[in-house]
Image 1 (cartoon, rainbow, N blue to C red):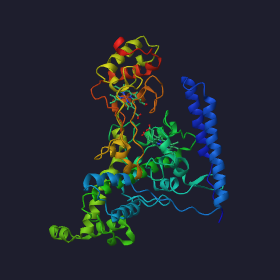
Image 2: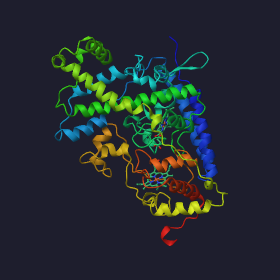
Image 3: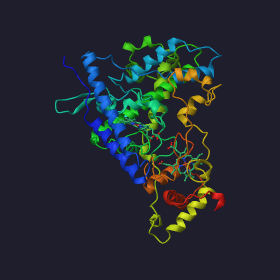
Image 4: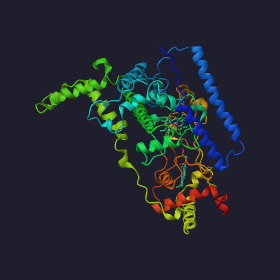
Length: 479
Ligand code: HEC
Ligand code: HEC
């Protein structure tokens, strides 16, 4: 068997591209302008160190096959549910861990061999938004054909070091990054054209992948071909849906008083999807008109549980969120002419925006009187709030949450409102992008949706926000 070394093709290209990008933006805005060499050296160092380390690994380890990676169990969620539902010191039974693993691998397979429930049948709703071939392409080991075209492993090559194999945002680099890489399992996305609590469209995710998220570690992948970007988008959805299903299972198990959710012995080869299909085909062939009550009664507990798990939890929960996302898109009205700095009414628009910023818009509460992000700074984002709201946890006192760190949580860090004096916009700097951020808020963060502002007022805020990097800093009370 030949030895398969990781590819350094597009992955390195993407790193170098983002290196260019970060330097360009740093120079443009004059931030760290006197240290670019240090930044370049540090980044080159990292690249060389990675290369040398990889060569050393192959030399030391030879070509022995590494064990196949597995998805991590969401132990933070388990601990959180334990604290919410069990008496102090009690733990979920270990059999629950196995049950969650078994159900999830029956539905979603493994990092090397993904499955996706109901993707095989023609009428399955999942076809609408996930292509199974894409999942196979993005999953698995980094592997390419003789021409260097990737056969599998796109996610592991480009994303796993930050987002983790499981999509839990806890890759090898995670603890050193601020903000942390996204944990997809919460099914929340920040920069999108849809309102709060709606999933992003493919186009939204494509923009994030192509442009990266400026001002964060999330790099741009614009050198990748369209099909690879789409495969990665489908894989992000897969990890998100899997992760959300896992959270739902853990929450369900917290109220079964130690009993299992399903008796897996009823499913042949542990295949739940096949078991459900069998039940449904038997149901369809039974003459239900005869005596519905009697046939319902005769359904085994397993059938009912499985029906609940897949039809009610999975379909109505994680899966449904991703269908018809296009229909939920917030329409952006035409950008007013006066947003152009050369327009005669521009300064009037900016002035209106400034007034709203400090009064009706309530923006200064967080972004501060100077708009430098120095307002309210003690909030946490939803990924952190999700577990620090558990009983007894004080995010400023490590001794109260050491058990969560041991379970895999990342140290809580308060989220800072953005310094709007720097022209770095994570979700894009076009007026249309800022309109969406202000109108819909930023999901998972304290930044609220501007429910009471009219379109004209939102455009005024956009104009003011865009003018802030050029405005003299004068504390509001002295104006
Ligand atoms: C060097 C680290 C790093 C790598 C590599 C990386 N990301 Fe990210 N990613 C981040 C960080 C950090 C964030 C969080 C940014 C934030 O919250 O503002 C993020 C956020 C995201 C988001 C959320 C966007 C949103 O609107 O909320 C998606 C989707 C995403 N990454 C997908 C990917 C995919 C797919 C890949 C691989 C092709 C990838 N990332 C590679 C660090 C990384
Ligand atoms: C309750 C606190 C809070 C309030 C009120 C608030 N923001 Fe924010 N805002 C934030 C936080 C936190 C972020 C950073 C979110 C992130 O990217 O993780 C942010 C980010 C932003 C961004 C950056 C968007 C990007 O793409 O990078 C803009 C612009 C912005 N806010 C404008 C406003 C305006 C205008 C208002 C008033 C209508 C406002 N904010 C009100 C907390 C707030």
